[in-house]
Image 1: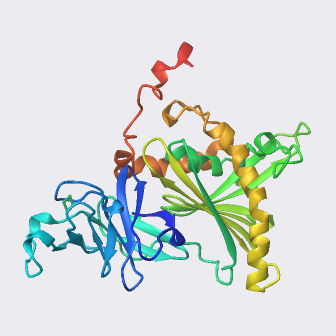
Image 2 (image 1 turned 135 degrees about the horizontal axis):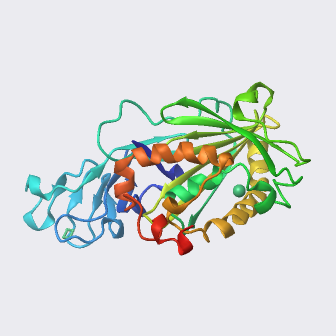
Image 3 (image 1 turned 90 degrees about the vertical axis):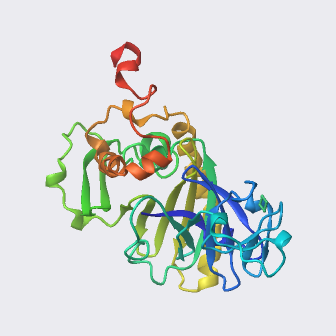
Length: 335
Ligand code: FES
Ligand SMILES: [Fe+2]
C-alpha cells in the first residue's frame, strides 16, 4: 500500500536525506529531474549509511568507498575499479517505489503492486494555500491515528480550545464507510441534559457541515468548512514512534499569499491543540490490544479492522499480535 511518509519540502535538492519509516532506515534524494528516489539506507558493500554521502549526477554516492547507486538500487560505479567497470548485479541496494504529489512523498510497502497513485482527498482543488508542521511522538502508529478519530475526547483534552462547550454526550457517532479503505465520521456531540444518546441509524449526515475523513493507512482530514481544512498524516517511524504531520489549508480571501500568511498565523493554535493531545496520547499504554472500547469508539474500531487486516504493516512495526503489555490476561486484576 501507499504510505505518506514526508512533506515534499523535506527532500531538498542536492543532498540525501536519511529518515526512519516503517521500521526501516531510508535514504531519499532528488535526482537531476527533481524526482524523489528512495533506497534502504544501507550500502550493500560494507553497510554504512548512504545518507552520510553525497549526490553525483542524480545518484547517491556512498561516503565510504564512493560506490554510486541510482534510484532503482543498481550500482553504477565502483571507483576502485576504474570508470569503465560495470558493477555486478550482487551490489544491488534495496529500493522503494516512491510517489510525490500534493506536497507529500509516499512510499509503497508490503506485497503487491500499486494499481495507481496514492489516494488523496478528492475535493482539495483551489486549496493549495497552506502551512505545514510536523513533530515526533513517542507513540505507536495506531495510537496516533486513533487519537484523531476519537470524537469524544474534545471536551476533556481540549476543554479550553476546540472542545469548549462541554458537549460530552455522543450521539452515534455516524461512521460512513466510503469503501474498503476509507470512511467519514460525523460527530453529533451534545451537552448532556439527561437525554439518551441517539443511535447512528437515527442520525442524518445531511445536516452536518463538518466531518472527519480517513483514508487508510494514514491520511486524515478535518473538514471544518469548504475553505478551511486540516489535513494530517501519521508516518510510522517504527513500532514505538510516529511522525505527526499536519497542514492547515485555507481559502478565505482567495489571494494565495494572503491565505498562506493566515494559515501560517493559525499554526501556533493548531500546535497548541496538538500538544493537548500529545500529553495524554504519549501517556497511553502503547499496546492497543488491552483496550476496552465503548460505543463512541466506533470510528476507532473501524480503523482497527483495517489495521488488523494489514499484516504487512503490523509486521513492519513489530505489532503482530497481543504482546505482554496488551494481553488482557496480563492486565492487573483481570480487568
Ligand atoms: S560501504 Fe559503501 S561503498 Fe563501501
Ligand atoms: Fe485531540
